[in-house]
Figure 1 (tube, rainbow, N blue to C red):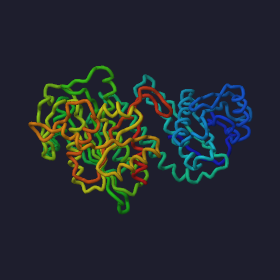
Figure 2 (figure 1 turned 120 degrees about the vertical axis):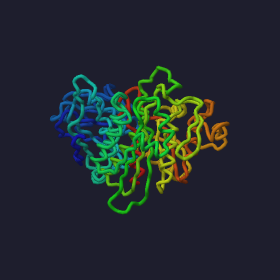
Figure 3 (figure 1 turned 90 degrees about the vertical axis):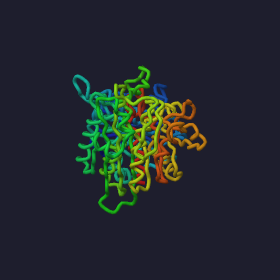
Figure 4 (figure 1 turned 45 degrees about the horizontal axis):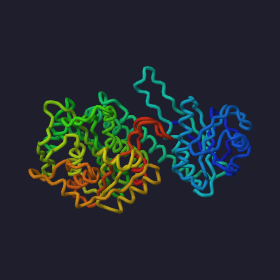
Length: 489
């Protein structure tokens, strides 16, 4: 994390590598500091920069900013249409440009607009630039990450106190995002159930979290039969990790977070198509989000008790693999007919949700890269959420909206349960139809939850095939920031 300073100055005397200046299209640019406004006006009047949304123009040795080698103009579009998330993304776009130029010392002018709260604009600016400050180079021959050394935010006279107070939460959320990116980007040869559990143990020690790791013997004794079945085809044996964060004072409530952690998903005997299988290393994103969120709760000293459950398996088509037609007796005692071994995440979650239901929590939230159907329905930038407690779902939706990591509610249609009925077991793991797959997956999970307040999040925004705004190519790291917003709210 770079050093961060928030100043009420204008930025015209900034001395560093680059000063980022977000600019509205039209005449609104006059609210920039005078020396900077002159530069922006000149290039706009010459039609070299229209300040269209996400448009970036670098300027060398701009007049009036004598101490800074570069100024970077980034467009915000029309002021009437601006939102906090547009500011976050515009700043992130400019920051990614600066990273590629290897500019280390960055200044940014927080835009002034009558339509948005200035304090929240400052927060969006900080989040945009810090979320963009990421470079995964672990597997490069000469790993030299392009990262910022320092970030200075200039508010042009606006009060900075609220942004300063929010800074610890912002930093914790961004650090959690980067942690998820690191884990999900790691090749499956290096991140497998045992090594993931070891990483969780390391992070738990660092943040003073309670931790319990269940190996194959403990899982067998605990009747985690669905978890064990999914992992049978792999030489890498499963692990289930329980993490515990408790505040120093009496907790206001108890939340259990459950994460799917399939460290590689080949589909098992129901083998996936080879196209894009390399991205199946990210099928553990739900577990990574839970782990990173627990660490962020400890960093921010959240007043809530949070338990995290990680179901870590590798789904491979080995000789001992579970098979279509098998019937599994889950931890709850309910039996599951397996029709497709590529619908494995819900089997892992079934055992964990049953365990979570006995933990006397106020809320259970599970997170999983569960269905391609959710991506088809919502695209790769919005995650689906469904649940049994509408107030809980609405709070999660609000948290996603505030952080710019959007969720959309899908209904738990009772009539669709008919498709999950099995002739030989209590339920089957797929319906056999391609319609409503995200919803029927949620209905399947609901079979194993006894707590009244439960929500399921089908993560559709966990991987990006190309760089966009503050999100690099690969794992986006979305999840911990909206969870932390909800937990602290």
